[in-house]
Image 1: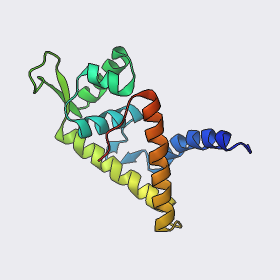
Image 2 (image 1 turned 90 degrees about the vertical axis):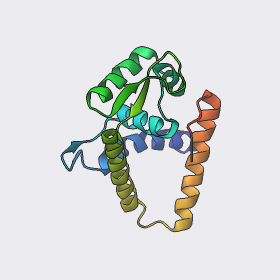
Image 3 (image 1 turned 135 degrees about the horizontal axis):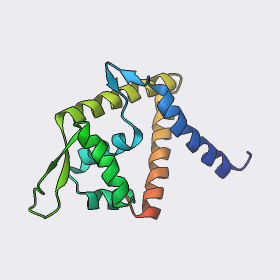
Image 4 (image 1 turned 135 degrees about the vertical axis):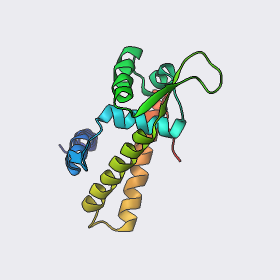
Length: 151
């Protein structure tokens, strides 16, 4: 695997695998959020209430896939359906207090796992890696036309 592009492909595949292994599967009685729940809750938290159509556009997924995913987080009490605050016809999903609690709890545990992994890195190495990951993701988002909001 001498080709840098091949190494990047391989290492990005492994990042997804390792993310799930960094934090225990069950924490303080809560089950881990599955990947789709974590992503949906993260996006709704940043954007505010979103409709199926808005989620479909943001994630590039069809409505039937999003209906399954949002139904699961709705049943779990992580989101609620509300009328569109701007008066539109479509109902929107808003994160609940429980959804926010679970998202923040899982994010904190993810960060603790990253702290362990990065323990031997300098502040400069961590910052440079964060900058490169941001550039990598924003270039993907530019090509797909689906930017992810950043604070």
